Image 1 (cartoon, rainbow, N blue to C red):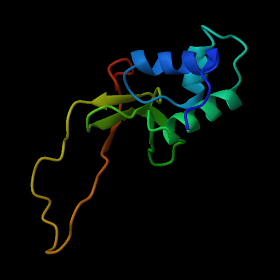
Image 2 (cartoon, helix red, strand yellow; image 1 turned 120 degrees about the vertical axis):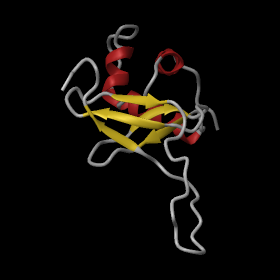
Image 3 (spheres, rainbow, N blue to C red; image 1 turned 45 degrees about the vertical axis):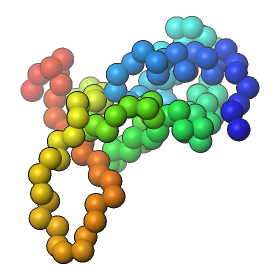
Image 4 (cartoon, one colour; image 1 turned 180 degrees about the vertical axis):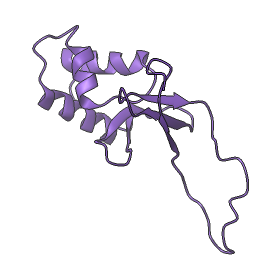
Length: 124
């Protein structure tokens, strides 16, 4: 069931309508503070969880990291995690385009690929 539409929820929805790449709850909070300075992290977590339940957002889980969130309506894609600045970037399309050589009878239902390294801002 959709939650009531508050100005806090509207601010969070607006953030996801204009960003590229998944965001952590703290990154959402930081951006939302521009519009709602007194917004708390508990409200952000509540809104993110509600939006996942409503299937407007999906979780992006990276090894050893807390969940990040992105719009659920995005086409299948992969991510690049900069280990220097900790930002996560969307990569266009699917990197897995060839036969995996799976043993007979194995069926892939889904997959996630995250590349790690340095982004252009961090160079090296």
